[in-house]
Image (cartoon, rainbow, N blue to C red; front, side):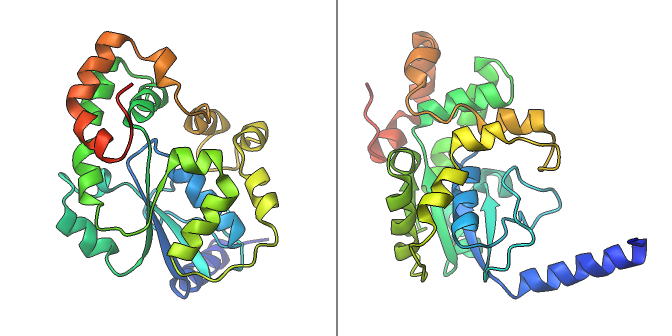
Length: 239
């Protein structure tokens, strides 16, 4: 039977063990696939996903994994207001970090659905998107959600190569399957961070390009006034 003292001892031991691991930071604007990429890395490297902050992230899992890394999910727009390149590089410069970006139109839609807000409130949240992407442009390893969605295994390996991390390809297909949208949504439980209902909302729809059917034309026009320039710099076409 665990006592309060023994639980604190176990927690302290866990924190000390985490401190001995190399941190890998997943950096991105909310609703860009941050949790998915964090879990893919944690699963494949057999390492825990820990927010390292007072509150757990949606991605936290695998606390008993023995691997040599710990995956940290960070949203720069929530760390700093406003996010700047200098502040972001002060935190992540010289560290193992990968930025994930996603078509801002799908980010916009996902924010509205996740926060169960109206279009106006979602637009307000999107005003920070261009500055956040710009602030992260010094992070040399970047992946696009769409590439990860289309070629999950090969894109995950490319990220590891760019981070100069050793890996064995064994188990890659199993990792991709375990962390797929279908499998994760099918296996929601209340012992995950937050509730199963919250997790289901956090997982979204796991698709690319839903904005075409879901965002009204007039609302999309307002959104493009905010993020069109940076969107095109990232290679997303205005069509």
